[in-house]
Image (tube, rainbow, N blue to C red):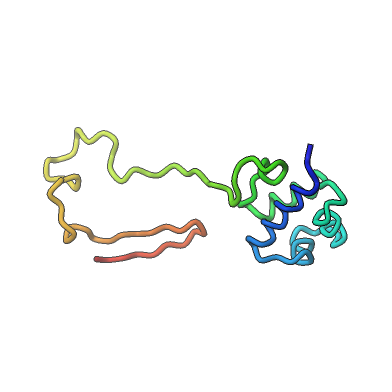
Length: 124
């Protein structure tokens, strides 16, 4: 069961994280402004519809964290990290890019990918 006061504290954390006022939050998830006021004061429990709208609009909010404080906020996203080298290196020539004698001069470029889908190229 959701504790109203604890839920309101977590909702305030979400608002602070995104820099939202109660009005801005209500507008962004298309709920009545009074609904936000009642939730923040601890007067009402959140409806399922309200929780789902928050989760849909704010991807970093974890369901279990929002409802009962278990988990983390912002959400820790686990992604599969691509390997930089082939898993089976038995077929690589001896002068391959896996050489232990590499120097910085051997690096052509470095690409940094950001969570928002952008990236930057760096050339040494």
